[in-house]
Image (tube, rainbow, N blue to C red; front, side):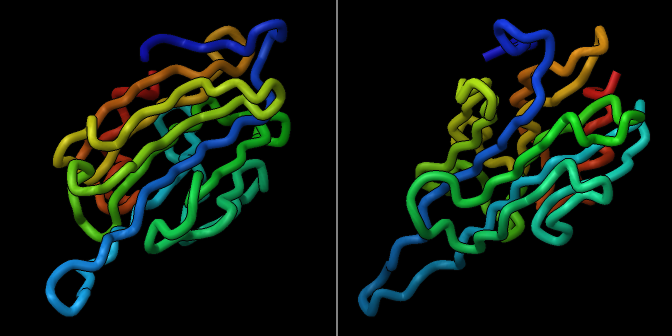
Length: 183
């Protein structure tokens, strides 16, 4: 999946969701002992040019302008479908913001190739159209993934697929690795 994906029939994206899902660690061994739980984290980071300005993730559920909201932290992957969800209302985003980058990190430190049925997706909430989807195993042994970015090169918000594996267990570790995607 590559390239920029504008909203068909409209000039700009307005409301987008990032969904992250994975299966919990299964019991192993003779007595059903579990390996270390897998704790993935979804994050949306906003930038003005190359300057980081705000974030919505498991430690800060809502951005200061309230446009980006993380709907709750899953530390195990239990349940079907999206285990973590971030919604971004681009109409409420601080007007100085030029880019919103979506990332996934593995807080518990496992590589994505050790995670069963891990996926991440971005959906246009107005049309219900999935703009991007990736199976996390494609990021191999990395602990982070830059899924894509929302940006407005011509004034209208579009989504551009990135799909780049990174080494990051926490958002703070990921920020310096995002500069190349902010131009």
